[in-house]
Image (tube, rainbow, N blue to C red):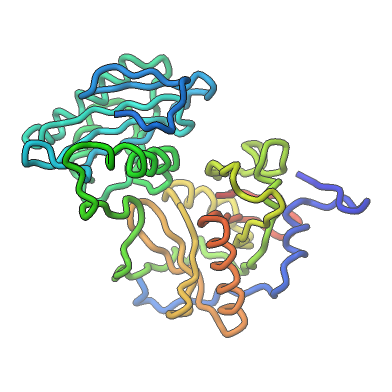
Length: 334
């Protein structure tokens, strides 16, 4: 994966490493104790009944990776909370919504809905992601008797977009809507008491760098695509973001790039962040796990602040790249 910049052809990831204004940080040893359909849906979609609906978008390619949510909504129906099961795939090519009476919220009913959806789908799932820790046991039991891989993960991007649409356009229009019941769906609250655990010794990188990459590289025709990200996975990029923007990221350099990337792929890595108060860099994975990547000195803390500012400017969009060295293409990119 190479780009021509001003007549000089360089590996793309070497280019953005050289654009970095800071210095490489070194990953020092860590202490052992750190451990109803939305109005936004256009005529491309068709619905069925009010209690259960399925919508399809023929402009999108179906995926074998599905996403699932089962939870109460900010609506009171006959004195009880409205419960819904939402199922979609990673491209958003279909959406299934089925409401459940509160006395039928159990693994058996959830399994029935999932199985019916699979039976009526031309593309069968190989994996189903879900992000709610509070529903882990019930969802895990429901999926255990279905031939799919259950993946606790916050990388449920299509589902997150759908929930945002419903919270904005659907639930407020429903009788019994209670705005006080609306809460953040994905991610921790303001009082986050989790303790990061350290990466396995054999998988830690030796160096890292805060870097940036043109947003255009993530769009169609850009250098970041399924052929260039190794074992990684890229999230959808909104068309509303400014085309001349730069996406902040972190590159981890290690001679064990392939091993680290393969391990991270199995952990459902979803983000990386700098806790400026604690002066640490944290990698977020699966539903709630945090890995301590590095401690930040004064220079690295300042670059971490710029990294977080860049994320905020693009609605949280950022990337992680794992490479053998600065001349090598990524073994994994998220």
